[in-house]
Length: 459
Image (tube, rainbow, N blue to C red):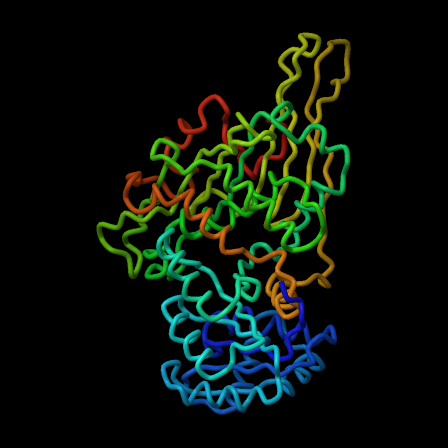
């Protein structure tokens, strides 16, 4: 894997929504830290000139995080703009001229996946792929077959070591903290296995609906939108073996090993739901079978985790907005502390950040009874932390692929969910602000109840 630093950043889709909400603010933050000393070339078909492009950048940072005068001035000095159609070779000839003497450009495809092929092909014909790397925005396909075809397209012009598949979730500080906590605290390793852990739950809840993005969501659904990527990434971080080194390939090797140990899902392992009123949203088919809720049960069939059930649940229009992991331990085996609940470790990923260990302590008084208490570490952001896009863009430009999905990882993740995509499992309607269909409770069975991320006491 090449770790040669990029000497130019090109982003296609420069006038689009992703650029407006995420890329410009990330670039301003990078400039504010004194880390943006390369040309930034936007490419789009909008009929704009450079001044209009700079005005768009200013509107973006004002709307998302605030204008930093010094940082924005630095960004503006680096901005370049190429206007043209992605199917026109002239657009890419103009890009080659704008790159000047840059030998290691990073091309960020902030565009729909259907355009990846034409853009990558034109980059190759114009000589813009030599010494370059490409940054690809998710989704990485819609199923296993489309993911494999997408990878073939990218690998036709770029070596795997030069392909950076960006999932912003991996750049979030709480997600990285989960991995750090696992491997930096030696007390955890002896109990982080099937002998001590009874079950693991991952919940990603949102208390809102599709928020006007019905046309997009009709092509996605909960399984595709967050389970196949974000939540399987969290599971891999929780379960992977300690990497043999800090190199990106060593980390990514361990994540792939975990996914290979997970059997493909069967219909009996899945519950799909749709909140009442979803079909009334703009852009939604009146007979839509898209899942706005998904719960799955899976296993990791390796030495460490054999027999431990993993439950993943995600949905919209649920009671809270929160993402939380609950690792529940086996109950104490001796009757001396009869009826003591199981201990757990709780990782709160959003909206606040916390790591908590449940304990039982003796209740005051003569009776030998206990009361639950959490030992909790809460993180209070100080405003100086990197946004996920700033972190990942910086890593991609440095050539550090640790937090980017590799070809084999992407295809293994799709292999797990592929058999239950579409309408293989029917959707069940659920009430808005409930915890989804009742079938989800039957899925978890005696390993339940599901952990409610709003509750703050031992289960």
